[in-house]
Each structure stands twice: as structure tokens, then as C-alpha cells.
Image 1: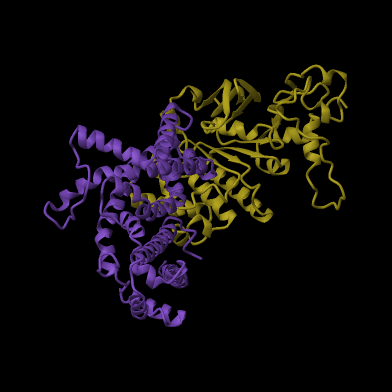
Image 2 (image 1 turned 90 degrees about the horizontal axis):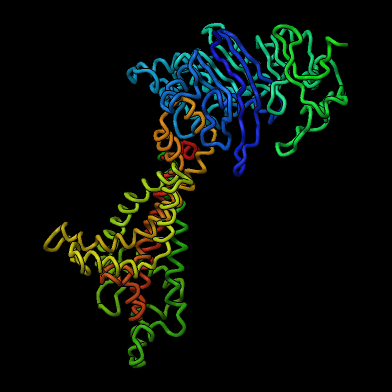
Length: 324
Length: 315
């Protein structure tokens, strides 16, 4: 049984009495000790999917309109708010895109880590303090004895993201959701933080969902990849399969958008056009207005998910690679 | 923190000097000769000339200012024309009432304003929020004399719980139980101010609740009440603390109507009566005291900022 099993998740933004769909029919599974990458442009629904898994949609305009999320065999969407809170921060934890603003500016980082520990573990203040020190050491913060009493504004972005990771690991979660954890950081720091997440995973055997817009980051880190476009998964496969046999034109477009460091190029092969807004109805395949391979059927018929190979699914009438 | 506090105190010196000069000039801004105004219409020219000499009005302006400032620093604010008493002791008589009234009013504002503000922010959009917002708007717009009269009607005349007017000093017979004289006036003054504080707490908390770190707090699995108080209200307090300070300072001068309705011997009523009596030294003295009071509150607000927000004191 998978650690996390999402079936046909539907999310909608409440606008007046209507729900505008933002995530449609998303099905994902994460096994223990496995890393899943979710890739896509801004607004494709990858972060909302993560917030839905974590249970943080409350207070936003986004509603869960359908589907199930099973975690360790339990249906999270059927839990009471209190039962849900016992999972949040304990068995499942999340780190966010903005390390600069994700910590409370008025409390010392040690207090914020201790709070995460004591919420779910019964231990003395002194034990929690020791645990917080251990965690800071684990995420390789230099001089944790001193840093534990720092305020967030006294730390750099990379250090704050490490503190966020320490906080997420406070109760040894089974699943860590990392929503663009390195996007706001300097390139050199990015690699350190990714490397840290990888080594922590190897050590604790937790599962990770890594959300990114960067196919390169995902290819280095993840076992499986799901590519999202406009609220749907358009391609999903084990990383090695995906990179050896990319089938969806959108996935190919994302790969083409990565600047190669060893080639000096004037132009990147960016995907033409833009993501249509939620209000714009796109008949047929949602990607066809921007697709280089679009043909007649793409404009009228929505392609369903089809298996290219046993573990490789793609939503495309004319998958690339295998046919050409 | 100590260096920050000392710095703040030093910056007050020029502010107070400028304010004292304006207060000093007040008596010279009145059209006509201050001495004849002080003495009224019936004074003879000899009396006017003598008072001018006594007040030093024949000296150059800057000499007068330096002499006046020297006296002020020694606690001599002049003599009341009406009471024939030192201005400082006239003000001191009213200060007890005003300070106790303002303190009790602040107590009500915090007691009612803070919890109601937190609840209406937590339940924003619900009927609870709409009811408190509606109530707050009502109390913010009701005139204090009307509210005061109604409270007298209900709680003094009707129920007989509290006295309707006056305030014997707590040093007099009755001691601290004399504070019951201030219950209705302080509630009257608290109503509009608590209403504003409720609106302010609600607005600041809604602002803070949209910040990223609140999502982090919720992701830890904290109870919503804990998130609201420890992570939202605590941060919103930084913005609200300034309002608390200035509300307290403003209460002293705002209390004029309330002091009149309840016949309280406070500073607000002293100012109004002194204006009617043309008792310029008292008016001048009260303005000076209020300026110093505001400055002191301002300093306290700055220090409160520094202790509430760790990002402030480091600079």
C-alpha cells in the first residue's frame, strides 16, 4: 500500500456561487522512502495540490470538490479538524517557497522549533531545547548553540530555509512536502539545500514530494515525476523513463526551457504563448494553443490519460518519441 | 535596548524646546496687550503697567522666554488669575481625576476591546463579526454626552448602582471606594475608543493572518486559537500598541464633555472653564503639561515597539 494515495482530486476556486476548477482529476501515489517530483509553470495547480494534501486550504478561496487523499491508509478528507491537526507537523510536514517570510519575525528560531516539537511530543522544555539543537545540527546550521537564540531577521535566506527544514523534521515525519524550496535562494545555496534534503531523506527514509518548476532539479532528485499543466497531470513516469522517452510536447517544452550551462546560446526555446486564465475555456486539449504538434483533434477532443508503457502515462493525442 | 532608550530620550529635548516656545508664544499671540487682557476691562492703566512689569512684559521677548523657561523647569508655571493660586497646584487638583479616569477607561478598553477584536478577526465574515462590527460602529458614532446621560439614567437613576456625578479624591473619606464615581464616566469614554481599538485589532490581525509565517504555524498542527493569539495577535500588537498609547494620551483632553456631563473636577473641565474665565496662565500651563504628557507617552510607545518587535532595537 502506498504511503500517500491521491485519487481523482478536484479543486475549485469559489467565485460567487460557482466553483472554477483549478485542479482536475489528479491521481498520484507516493511510496515509502520515495521522492515524487511535481513540475509545471506557475498557476498549474501544483502548489494547491500540495496545500490540499497538507490540509492548509482552510481560509483560502480554494475548495476540495472531489476525490480522496489516503495517507497511511486513512482518508485525510474524512478526518475531523482535530484529527487532521494531529497529522500536520507530525506525520506530514511542509516547507515553503519563501524562507524570508515563512518564519515568525517576533520569535527566536529556537522557540519556533520547540513549538513544533512540543505540539506533538510530550517532553520537558529542556529535552525540547536539546532536540532543537540536534535538529539545527542535522540541517548543518553552523554554531547551533548560538543560532538557536537568533531571530529570523538575523539569518540569511538559506539559513532560514534550513531552520524551516529543521522545524519540518521536528517530529520525524513520514512525508515531507517541499514546495519550491529553493526558488527564492541563490543558485549556490539552492544546490546545498537540495543536497541537504536528499541526504536527510536517505538518512530518515521519509518520502518527499518536491514541487518545482525546474525539470533539472527534479531529474537529479526524484524517483518519479508528474508534469502538471492547467490543473491536470499531463505526463507521469519514473524519472529515468521520462527522461529517456518524453512524450508530451509540454514536457519537451519545459526541458527546452532549461539553460544549458555548457552552451552559450542567445535564445532559450521557451514555450510560446502563456497559460490561459481560469476564465478562458479551452476546448479539446488544454495545451493545444501553445503546442507545436497540435492538429485537428487536439482542438476539439480532450485526450484522456493513456499508458505509453506500463508506468508511463500521458495525456496527448499525438505523444512524441514513441510514434516518431 | 538601553542605548536605544537613551537615544529616544535625547531626541525628545529639541521637541520639548520647540513645544515650550510655542506654548510661551501663546500668550503673545492673543491680540492686544497680555496684561490688560489678564486684568480685564475694568483695570486702570496704572494696574496694567504694574502687571506688565511684574510679568516682565517690558523685557525683550527672548529674555522673557528664558526667564519663563527657567521658572517652568523649577515647577513655576505662574499664578492663576482666577484662583490666585500657583498654576501647578490648580492643575495638580485636576490631574488626579483625569489620570484615574484615563486609567480606568484604558482598563475597559483593553478588557472589552482586545477579546472582542480577536474574536471578530478569527470569525471574520460570520454573524459574530458582523454583530461586533455593527456594535463598534454604533458606539464609535454615538455622542459621548448622549451615552453618558443614558448611563446615568439607567445605572444611577434607575438601578442606583453608581453615583451620577462628582468625584471626591481617593485621599478623602471613602478611599479607593470613591473610584465608583468614575465607573460610569470611564465607561462613557471607553465606548467610542474601545470601538476603534476593536476595528484596529481586527484589521491588523486580518493583515497578519495573510502572512506566510501564519501558514507555517498552521502547518505545525497548532490549534486555531493558539495560532490566532500567539502568531497573529502577537504580531498585530506591534501596530496596535501605538494606538493604545495615543488613545491614553488623548483621553485626558478628550474627556472634556464627559467631565462636564458627570461634573468631574478634571483637567478637561479646567481648560474649558479657564477659557471662559480668560485664565490664560492656567490654559498655558495645561497645554504645556499635556504636551509633556504626549511626549512621554510617545516615548513609551517607541519603547514598547522595541520590546514587541525584535527587528527595531538593533538599529
